[in-house]
Image (tube, rainbow, N blue to C red; front, side, top):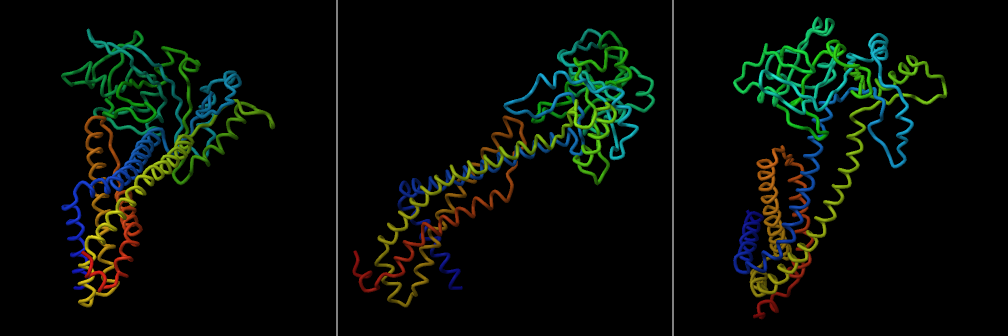
Length: 415
C-alpha cells in the first residue's frame, strides 16, 4: 500500500507541476516529445519500407533465381560494355535447364513488351505492358486472380490466343463488367480474355499487374522474335521447398556453363540474379536510417532530459519545506528520493505519450493520402517509451537524491 500511495502522490505532484507551470513544463517536455517522435517515426518508416520490400521480393519469388544478360546490381566501375556483348537467354537454355535441373520445381521463360496499345471495339488502352510467358509462370511469380483462370497446359503448348489482363485494363475497357470471354486486339491479333488479375498497385520496384496483359509465349512466337534483346528475355528458376536460392544458384551456374560450353577459367556470359540481393543492399540503408534516427532523436531527448532535470530542481526548491515536514514526521530518505524520481519518470512518459500520439496521427494521415500501409510495431512503441523512462531516471536521480539528503530542520525553515 505504501508503494502505491507513493506512486499516486508522485503522479499528483507531476501533474501539479504541469498545471501550475504550463509553459515552462511544456517547453521542457518538448525535447522528450520530439525525441520519442523521431525515434519511433524513423523505426516505423524503416519497418514500413522493409515490409513493402518483402512484399515486392515475394512477388519476384523469394526462392527464385533469374537468369539474365545483365546483373541487377552494379558499382562505380560497372563494365557495361562487357555485359553488352553477352547473349540473351535462349529457348535452348530454357529447355535444357527444364530438363536437367535437379533443384528446380519450376522454370519459366519470359519476355516483356512495354508501351503497347490494345483495343476493344471503339475503346483503347495505351501504355500497356504485354508479358509473354511459359506455363510455369504462375509457379515462379506470386499473383492473385479476381476473375477467371490461368493458362492450361494445352493453352501453352498449342499457342492458344488467350490472355489474362490487369485490373485497370479491365476497368477501362469493360466498365460494365462481363470481361471473361471478350476479345481484345493486340498487335493485330484477336485474343480471348480468360482471366483478370486482382488489384495490386505498384510495389517498391515499380512492378504491377494492374496494367499488364499476359499471353502464352508459344502464341507470342507468331508475333515477335521472343529471343530478341528488345524484349529482355529472362529465365526464372524456382527452387524446390527446403532449398535456398543459393542452392539453386549454385546448380544453375554449373548447368549454364555446361549448356553454353564455357571452358574452365573463362568468365560467365550470363548473370544469376536473386531478389534477396536487392533486399540485402537495402538492409544496409535501413541500418543507417536506424542509426540516424537514434542520433537525431538522441540529441532531442538529451535536451529534453536537461529540461526535465531543470523542472525537478525547481520542484525540489519549491517544496523544500514540505520535504522537511515529511522527514520530521518520519519519512525515510528512499521515500523522498522515489517520490521525486517517479515524478521525473511520469513527466518523461507524458512527453513520450505526446510523441507517440503525433506518430499515430502521422500514420493515419500518410495512410489516407498516400495509400501506404504504415507499420507501427509494438516493439518500436515499447522501445520509445522505455527510452522515456530511462531519461526520466537519469534526469531525475540527482534532484531526487539532493531532496532526500536535505536536513529536515533546515528544510522546514526554508520559505
